[in-house]
Image 1 (cartoon, rainbow, N blue to C red):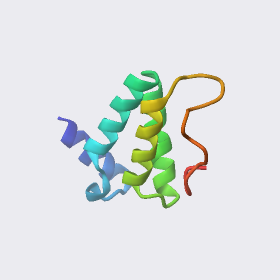
Image 2 (cartoon, rainbow, N blue to C red; image 1 turned 60 degrees about the vertical axis):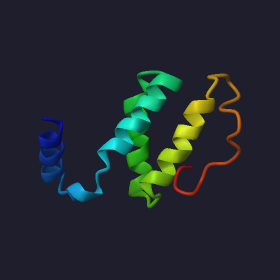
Image 3 (cartoon, rainbow, N blue to C red; image 1 turned 90 degrees about the vertical axis):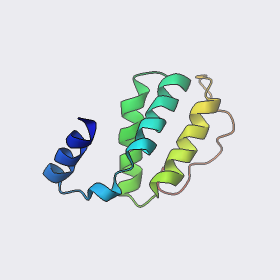
Length: 90
């Protein structure tokens, strides 16, 4: 059912199904939901899509976000270890 949905949405939006890495997006959503907050999962995957639309490779952006989620403390100072936004994610 999920594959049919992805195919239908890609067709409707004029996207190439081959460009959609389902597992990458679902893994990222899981990591954010567990490491940050459940509502952060769909919002973060949307942000991933924006970054990809601006030219950042999906795997690179997802790796950076996953790294952030794994170290996220939720303090006002931001995520430890993140010093600068990578190109395309700023």
